Amino acid sequence: MPGPKDLDPSSSPRALLGAELRHAREKAGLTQEELGAPLFVSGSFIGQLEAGTRRMQPEYASQIDELLRTNGFFQRNCRVSGKSRYPDHFAEAAEAEAVATTIKEYAPLLIPGLLQTEAYARAVFRAYQPTATEAVIDELVEARLARAHLLDDPTTPLLWAVLDEAVLRRAVGGFEVMAEALGHVGSLIRRHRIIAQVLPFDAGAHMALEGPVKLMSFTDAPPLAYLQGLGTGQLQDDPARVARYELTYDLLGASASSPEASLALIESVAEDYAHEDQP
Image (cartoon, rainbow, N blue to C red):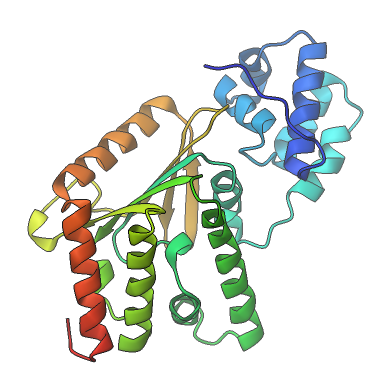
C-alpha cells in the first residue's frame, strides 16, 4: 500500500482529525494495526480515518483519546466533523464519495444520485416522504444536487455506472421528467464524463439481484463498498467482502450491453418519453 499523503488540516474537519490522528499515533510509536487492535477494527480502518475517507465516531474518539493520551481532543472535535447534511445512514458514504478517485455503481431501480436531475430527485424524495413539507424536500434535493458537483471536474472521479433496464423503464416523476433525466445521463456519456452500461432484462439472474452496490477507490486508502437498503446503509472495508463485491460488479459489466449499445438504448427510451409514448 502506498504511503499516506499529507493532508491539509484546514480543508475539512475530517482532514484535521485525520492529520492529528496520524501525528498522535506515530508519536505514540504505534502502527495502524496496533492502534486498531484494542478498538476491534482493522489497520485499514485506522488508515481510512487518517486519510479522511471515513468519519470518526464518538465511541472510537473516546477510546483513541485514552489510548493516545490526547486529553479528549478527538472526542471534542469529532462532534464537529460528525455534522452532515445527509441522512445518518448515508453520511459516511457521501464523505468517502467526495474524495474517491473511482466510483463504480450498480443501480437496480433508480438513476444514481450523482446523475439525477433536479426534477427526478424531487420526485424520488417526494415518493420517499409523501407527507414532508416542501422545505424538507427542497433541502434534500439541494443536498443531492450539491453531490453532483463532483462531476464538475472533467476527469476525477472516474464514474462507471451499470444501470438495470428497470431504471430506464420506471417512469419516476412522469414522462417529461424521465425524458430530461435520461437525456442528462446520455449527455454525460457523450461528453465522455461517465461510463454507463445497461443491464438488459434478458440478462437473467445475476449476483446483485438483492440490491445496489457502490465501490469506491482512493489514492491513499483501501477501497470501500457501500450497500444500501430501505432507510439503511453500510460501508464495508473488509478486504474479502470488498473483493467479492468487485467480482460482482465485474460480472455485471460483462453481462451488460456495451457502452455504445447502452447509450443508444438510453437515448431511444428518452425520445419515447419525450413523445409521451410508453417505452
